[in-house]
Length: 355
Image (tube, rainbow, N blue to C red; front, side, top):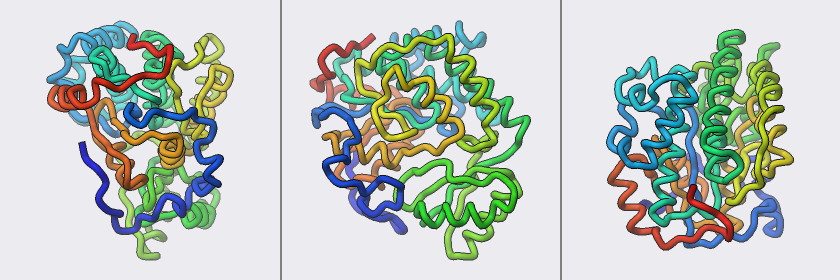
């Protein structure tokens, strides 16, 4: 597990992050999150883009992971473990494949950690990761979580085909500059901030033409960018049809109260069953407030952030958001065993369960 040792070029201290709401008074900084025990980790779950061929191969036979993969396979109608083991990068990048694989692996590894005595103080998901977090928080069963991931991935893939677009990460960026850039370069197209990742990194989403204009203008201002390998303009108005479809789907879903706090990226606040439908729908067309969410959890007492699933991207973002936080990525057998050895004494909030 690593600790942050410095602020990368272009980054800013959290209090001046440029993310709306990030510099609130200390009394409101935790945004309604209950006090968290510093010895217990926050579990973080990654979103689409973290997937890679072969991910999860050496943990597929861990009992909790195997059960999650089998449950997901039943729900999705294809062998999720075989997909992860044998699909090429193009096939695995399909939204209909990437989201099931990432969700199942995240839930399985989280169950494995909890069965071995590592209980989270809170859970946090990035985009799709919020669906994974619903299972671990206790708000949905694993089966209902995978069914939601299936509906969500299909709706998003269809919306991306109907209204094509893309996403680009702007580096050395702050919220105000990116918002101004979007207003200037939209020129009648869709172009919006989509992810507030960390100090110095904001992702924009929109039509291909608008993205190209924004990237050129940002580069002319001395900035840098990285076009993301996504199949659509997620967290933008181009996902409006997916949001409406998800709203209809969620009418038949019942959410239980969270046993473990789930911080939602829509508003960086704990999610309850009464807001779950609205927030999950809004999340498809509104920005991911990941930086705000990490800052709020840190203000509530969280000192360790563990990315559970695959990729390591979220752990890297935490390094840039909170220099004092410890971070880890649990994605294979070695990292699972090492994290359990160090954190098996952590305690969950009263009433939290491992299954």
